[in-house]
Image (tube, rainbow, N blue to C red; front, side, top):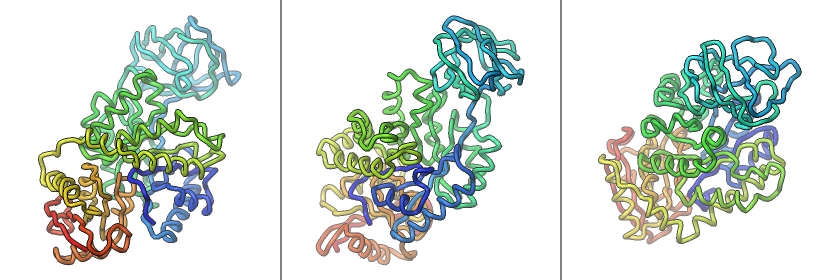
Length: 470
C-alpha cells in the first residue's frame, strides 16, 4: 500500500481509537504515525495499543511509526477549600508554598523552583491563559500578584510562565518511568514536552541512545531564543500550538510557526504541525473551512506532517478526521502552486557530501524525468537528506533495518521498504529497480535516480548518485 501524497499524518490513539478495527481503519484512511499520549492512560493501555499497531503493520505489510509523547514538567496550582474560586480583575492574589487548601486570596504553587526565577513585572497564566496574573513581588516563599482579568479558577489548573526560562528538568520522574517503558515496548520516536534549551534534548538522548529518535516539542517562548541549537540536536520538531498559543499572543503564533518551519527545512529535520488542526471534528463530522485552510497552509509551507490529537483520540469521528486530512493534503499537493511554493522555499544545500549529492539528485530527477528517487539507507540519513530537497519525484527508501523504515514513516515524501542487505553497487542498482517496479513507481523503460552511501551500512556517508533504466 502506498500513499498518493507526500506529507504525512500523525494520529493520536485514545479511548475512541483503542480497538484493532478502528486502528486499522485509521491507517487505511491515511494515518502514517500513531501517537501514544503518556499524559493519559496506563502502561497496560499503551501496551495493548502497541500490540494492535504492530499486528496491523504485519497485516498491511507497510512500516508504521509509533510516537511516545511524554507528559513533561506540567506546572499546576494546588487545591481550593471548595474546589473553585471566583477571581475579580484588580484584586490581589498570592501563590505560596503552603500546602493548605486555598481560597480567593491565595493558593499553593507546589513548584519551589519557580520562586527563584519569578520577578515583578512578569505574567503568570492560569488555566490555559484564561486567568492572567501580573506579578507585583516575589520574596522566595510567596508570589504576590494582581488579577488582570476576572474568571473562575478550580483545583489543579495549569500554570504557564511565558517570561522566564524555568529551572526545571526536561524529564520528570514520571517521564523517566514512561520513557523506560516506551523504549522497552520498542517505540520509534520519543516526543519531549516543554523543551526550552538544547541541554533538555541532550539529557534525554543520553537515556535513549539509539533505541529511538528524538522529537522536540516547541511550546514555550524560551525555546525560540535557542531555536537553531535545539533543531540541530533534535531528530525532528513539533510545533505544539496549544501551550505555545497560551504563552504567546495569538497573532504571533502563525509567524513563529513559519519561522520554525524555515529553520527545520534549512537543517533537513522533519517538522510536525500540531494542535487544534481539525478541533471541531471532536464533535462534528466535518471541519470548519478555517480548519481546512489551516491544514492546507501547513502543507503549502512544506511541513513533513500534520497531527490530530483529541480528534482521533477521544472525538466522535476519528476515522473521518483522518480521511478529510488525507484529502486536504492530496488536494494541496495536486495544486501546481504547491511545487512552486516548495521551490521558492528551497534552502541552499549545507556544505557536506550528503547535501551535495542530494541537491544534484533533485536536479537530475527533474532534468531526466525520473519516475522515482530511490535512496538506499541503513541509518535513514540518505533518505532524510533527499527529503530535505523536496524533489518532484517520490522518494522510495530501501533499508535492511525495520527500525529505520518505521522511523522514516514520519518524513515527507518517503515511502519506506525493507530489503536484504546489499554488498556492492550492482546489487544495489538491481534491488532499486526491482523494488521500484514492485511498489508501483516505475515500469519497463522508465528512468530512476538512485543515491546511497558507500561503504554500505556506514551512517552519514551519502556519496553515490546513479541513474538506471528499468
